[in-house]
Image: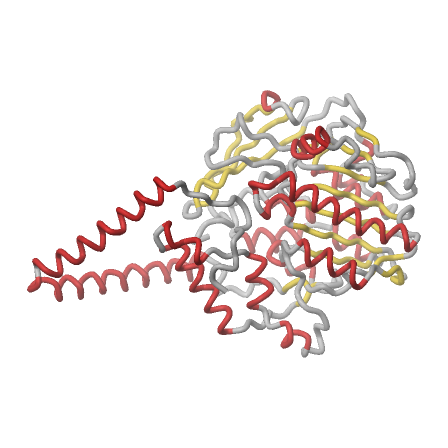
Length: 462
């Protein structure tokens, strides 16, 4: 396994030779100091070793107690998991299909179009909305927000926020009451337990793990964290491999109540190969809602344009099969990102804007060339757009994308949180009011509303 996983999800880490050399010298200095103490302070060595070992045990014990008290380890709030059930099954009558292309910033799309002006031509009947804004700046809590409409103020543990959001929101229950066949294909962590019984692929059971592979991956993660820079590359890991190797899919398939393996998160090529090999079907009698979350640009932030193009090509392949089945025209399709470029660490806003890729078509449109609309749209328009796709009442949720017109004066709010570090996570949430074009950083105005982040998904201890 070691040495095979070369690409991390997110930013590729590439230390220069000078950094590696300095880091190696520090490590050699530490070993030299330990060896010196052992040689020149022989009498005190055993006492020092015992004291140091006891101190380490005490530190780890305190950390363990803290984790048990502040995370979800001892709670019953853990969700089930999301399987592949229904992933390729659509309706011959009415579909609302959503593709979330992670971290695909609209300006990446603009750069692609500068090089290949015809790249979006396969999206017949679609409209591209370049003046779009997300509500949140990171995948958590953006995915949960899209599915519930509830803003996260980071005052609850992530699982509590997610479960509470799904409990308070009427969106998924409203679709269920109208007999919509729902499938959410994303990280199961982002979907609350309230979805159990409402969506087709929610499995309220634990995933059995392969013990040896799980320990091996945990060891790799520890070694990657603690090794000198010179050796870290031998222990790098990719999240998609963890998901596909530690889960015991044979044990899952043997359970009568399951019947399908877990959805393989952020494994875009697997998703593409699967629907190309198995083929889509259009035999579902009820209307269908499908929500597919692909890794896209987040798989490697140093290759955003390449990965962005590839994720759209995967979408094109999916749409081609919908055309072959004769269900393209009677389907609403929304292609969007969970957030735009959220920039590096730190809370200073000016160089960061929120421009998630947003492209959509409504039911009944199929052959017109793709259009461009500068309408000031937002993630707040997502739930109304889905409900409108099923001809359901959306007034309590806002307005759908195609009801927003160019030149409209509209207040749009953006809740920005930066990943300060893996240890600190996000430390502050700031509210910005967008006045004008989402691509212009000067149009983002800090409202002075801010919240200390009590619980962060990215913190080592939530």
